[in-house]
Amino acid sequence: MNTESRPPNRIDAPPVGIIDIGSNSVRLVVYRGGARIPVPLFNEKAVCALGQGLGASGHLNPEGRALALAAVGRFVALGVAMGVERLHVLATAAVRDATDGAAFVRELEQANRITVTVLDGPDEARRAALGVQCAVPCAEGVVADLGGGSLDLCRIAERTFTDVASFPLGLLRLEEASGGGVRADAERILDDALAEAPWLRQGNGQSLYAVGGAWRALARVCMARMSYPLRVLDNFTLPTLDAAAMLDEIAGTPPKEFAQVPGLSKKRMAALPLAAVALDRLVRIVRPRRVVFSVYGVREGQFMAGLPDDLREQDPLLASMTVMARQAGRFRAHGDEVADWMAPLFPAEPPELRRLRLAVCIIGDIFWSEHPDYRAEQAFHRVLRLPFMGLDHRDRAALALSVYHRYGGSLDADLVQRAESLLDDPARARRTRIIGAALRLAHTLSGGAPGVVGQTRLERAPAGSVTLTLPAGNPLFDGRFIQRRMEKLGRALDLTPIIAMDSGLAME
Image 1 (tube, rainbow, N blue to C red):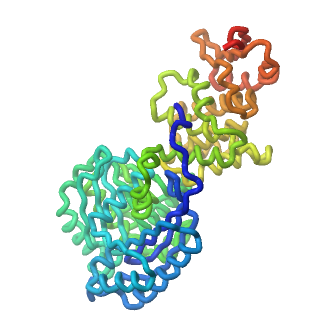
Image 2 (cartoon, rainbow, N blue to C red; image 1 turned 60 degrees about the vertical axis):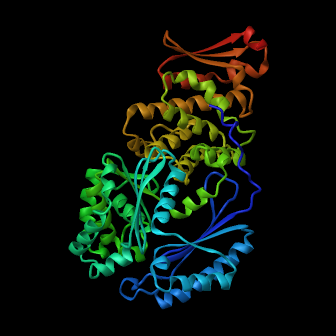
């Protein structure tokens, strides 16, 4: 479980900029350079509606064209001011489909001395799928990206993009084609189009990843209707039966009824029923096991495509944890040492749980500077809400609870009950308490310094005890100062705690 063997992020690398010229908006995102994870330093969009009326006229919206030209000029200048050396400018459905799209690209390039890459439909679908893989490398199933101008689909099997399709049925185009969003007409149009991609049915029983701003807004509505305990959109997951019932209901709801949904933009409200119709038709055809909402798509896919192989192969969760530990930890990051030390407490541990335990150990000491009266709660909320990649909501709750218990948080706190409701498994909840107690013991024993816990031995004995063996004759390892922490670990394990001294261990 060695984290230090992974290549370090290149913290001195210049930032990476991506301008995304979409059918509805133009957006600039500037990411920290040299990192495995796309950490945004700047994110701004301009709603231009380039694709408004495209289906009828065949041309870009003239007002939107002028606004988009100005937005790109501003964004290019911002990129220069921010020291961006690699600026990727992408154009998608509206520009590629409009008869005046090529002329608009030439105008952008000449005015700003840039190169604009116009993605065709399959390329856009692959970029969205790569964005999902950026966060979830082992993603399997169908990625669906709903934009303003197109609906782009890609099937992932064994980390390979096996099938792709793109239809001019983004929300702007679908609304226009269906007479202003008439549900029956929209369903017919979508069903006819999706029938041209029979491979969608191969996603049966897997995951359907929903990408795009409209579906993120839809996730907010679902969360509100469920009184969901966590307001983190990425990896919000619904079993298919729950998704189908909720989508059908939202598709028939007047948009004004969404006004009280927390965090929902007014501009998104009007399109929500049509967005629900589009996702509902996909669910009916793909018949996935679950619907997973992803906040990562084309831009993150472009970021991922530009990474060198050594960074791309890193685990996104462990990479982000390692960056945090290096930035906020007191001493050199040594989560792997602590994770190996406590490993005997978790016999027959499956790899996915070992990975999460390692993640907790990497960040187990980074909240030491918080006020002691609020340390556990602050650590819990930060871990629960930070934009970590590679975490579903159950694992996110387990991670937050483990860190909370590491700082001695109360077991009776309301936040614990809410987080444990996401785990839906008493064994997982107990595991977070054991990890937290072991971490608390480790950092009390070592003061957070590397190279200390490795001089001791933690064992779970068959006779119903947990034993910490310390080197004899070294004042650093006076067992009286860790007795309380050891007793707490014993209670978490329901085992008798024993502190033993070993003169032989001192010579190792």
